[in-house]
Image (cartoon, rainbow, N blue to C red; front, side):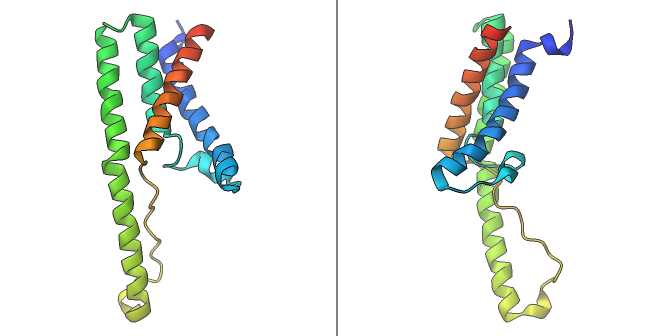
Amino acid sequence: MTILSNYPLVSALAAIVLAQGAKVPLVWLLRGRWNPALAFGTGGMPSSHSAAVAALATAVGLERGFGSAGFAIAVVVCAITMYDAAGIRRHAGIQAGAINRIVEALKEHLPAACDPERQPLKELLGHRPVEVLGGAIFGMSVGVAFHFVY
């Protein structure tokens, strides 16, 4: 048995790649901006973290049964990951934005107090709930699609 025959693993990894790739055309369609860098960053629609764990849980459920211990573990990991993406990581991004604005204001009034080489904190860390939901639906779809491939 090779790693490529591990349907749940391949589904989860494919969901990550496909969700990241989907961000670029979605932003182009919705906002008219073409930004290939979105495929390599965090945040945005759909959540690739949510897509991965939803694809994994779906694949485990379809392969091993929805009453299996493996499915239970996958669902718990899925719930924790999605909660983290929409909660803790999102709020860390909001705080990073506030810190960046404070530092910019300090630069104007107290330039000597600021490190001129400081890079702004990354603000797009987490997801809005709709992005997490979109990732979950996307991931479940990948899990089901790969079920028919395998």
